[in-house]
Length: 504
Image (cartoon, rainbow, N blue to C red; front, side, top):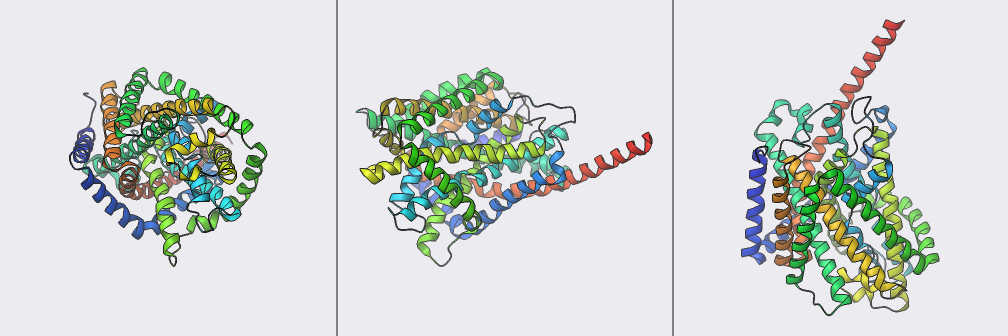
């Protein structure tokens, strides 16, 4: 504990205050976070759409610019992990529980209950449902992660800066980042991470409970969700104790095996031809409509604008809140890769896998809804299990899904405790186990409190509220990176010119 900084104590105090507040006055917490969420969504929806699309454009520019050849590290550095392990680790940390929670639920909801613009239950709603799912979980989401990861990896491994968000802003603000302003930046990043991960853990606990309720006589209750959180907390603390190279690596690879098994079996026993046809057709629709969706705000249609606030703005806030955690983690495992290699991998590979995932589970659910109905009436956390119930090996698929949620739960929380430990021990790549344990308990406690104070809606409210201040820091990070990388490139080119003249 000697390594901890004031960021640890300040953020811990804020987090504990939030936990106590939610325990003592849950309705008051839900009401206030709901008001903040509503204000941000209504008045700053345009801001979220512009900055997130701007992040994607910046990533594409970096891939194709001369800066793409520069390494995230010294010229002689090599990647620590092979491609398979690298993709598994970033994918497990970056999406995890959300893929299982929303894999069937989001497409079926858009198709049967609340389509973005089309009439529900129609062919147009079917097409819209898949392309908007791709939009929410594809390149834009990974563009947000990629920005934070790229900036942190560059400053940490190329310039030798501490692995802190505040350190990446030194080219803009100089030594001010070593004082109180730097602490403010790091506190915002740490708190956004806590809320982002706690929200996801809440979704995971709700879905495990939903699966148990669907398959057994157990009821859907906060008490069972609390027990699930407690059990998984113990498991991810054991994983955190073993360290990054063992615990997270093994669990990440386990996640990929389970996810691949779930995907493959569903693809085989489900409506295979329908899935592949939908995948091919809606990928084209997604690419064709990507510019329009990226800037769509519907200012003259209140119903459509409400939909955008509830879904697109929520997702952009979710990814931003997760970005300090996922970005730091991806940066940590990406040393030695070129910027072009890094951004291409982070943007494209997980996005394509996500498209296939949603196409498989979403199309399977929609097929059941078309032929038998009933899925759209289930609770969100039960839709995946309701889908499996209509196909061969349904019980086996449900069991694999619940185990996968559990391992994703552990991986996300495990990775987050590591990242929070780094951020509150001045960027240490080996944070003390006790610090990780403290953050693990805080995350689980906040997940429990948010579920207690208002279920999934409270989770969403807290998320959008926490993400907003960090979004401004992300913009400054982009500007700071461009300033630093431009200066480094000029110095590198001058050095090469001098070498050539000397050798001549």
